[in-house]
Amino acid sequence: MSDPTSQLTPNILEETVQVMNLSSLELSMHEINVLKKGLGFCPSSKPDYTNIHVDLFKFIRNLKLKKFFHNKPDTHKTTHTTLPTCNQTIGDLQDIHMVLSLDNTSSQPPSFDELLVELNIIPNLDVNSGLRPNSMFVPTLPPDNHIDVFYQAVSTELYNLEDKKRMSTHRPSNNLNADELRALHKLSMCPDIVIREADKGGNVVVMNRSDYVAEIDRQLNDTQAYSLLPSNPLPNITNMIRKKLAFWKNHCLLTDLEHRFLYIEAPRAPCIYILPKVHKPGGFPPGRPIISGIGSPTEHISEYIDSFLQPLVHNLPSYIQDTRDLLCQLEDIDWSEDFMFVCLDVSSLYTSIPLERGLEMLQRTLSTRDATLHDHTRMLLDLTRLVL
Image 1 (cartoon, rainbow, N blue to C red):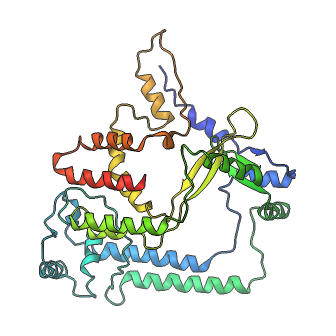
Image 2: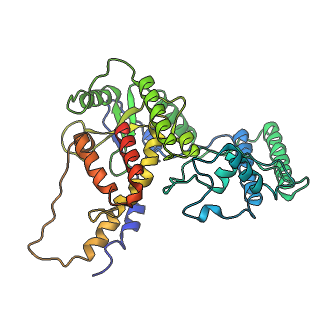
Image 3: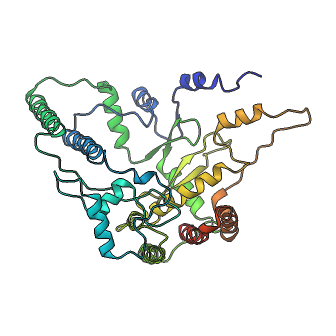
């Protein structure tokens, strides 16, 4: 049997974005051409020199970090480390810091926490998520080092280029013509339409805002899946998360770095939006609900839980990664004439899963890990209940 996936990539690359207008607005040819470029298309814009300088600084910082920690011991490669345990005193930690910075004679030594971040030294835990807050440590190198000389040279060139662009009368080229620019501006200023990517296929869908809002209201009014809250629960949820994380940190199941990463100081409430299922037959297409949890109280907790669940999911016998993986698995099946393909579609899958039953199955799966991770399993179940 030939490789069933060998022809997938050329066919996908030949596809073009289609525009589906479900709104009452009549789109002009130029508006359609702009939308056909896809929602990921970036119109030309003036160089943002502030961001360029920020990116340059980040690049230089990475170079300095690599140079600063080049000869440090590779403690992050060990599975278990004795530095430090939860029962060690502050004096012990200071002694460790002093030992680690003995060879740092040419610059200000970093704090102990910064060394932990950069060297990935994790307190006495059998599991390590690797999650941590962004480090702000910038090593100070000896004067006239090559990295700082390079930084100064590039910065000077950028400032000179910025001055030349400011005084130049030459108009930069644009990847949209004048008609397309006007069409893009008109679409962005129209309050009566919503433009979304289709749930499948990557096509662009234009909808009446009233139809879009009505579909979201229809889904949120399903009392079996959602309930109306009498008040904003954000303060109570944030306080509960703070107490939970402090509890598990005090029980030595979260490192200080993980604790700082997981707790979000000023969270926002998650937002819902929908992707139209234009492949479904009928009138106005139903929408696939997406909850944007960026900045929400449990965003980082969800990432932490996912880091431990993903490897377990990949080991399930029923796991299929994507279409290519499915085709590869089908190729290994000794097909019989009495076999048939069956496709099942579950309506509102995630909101249909009973909470307690889901947690029970999660506990059963986590129990397959090493017996020494019993307390860590308890914490994962507790945090999962918090997220759900």
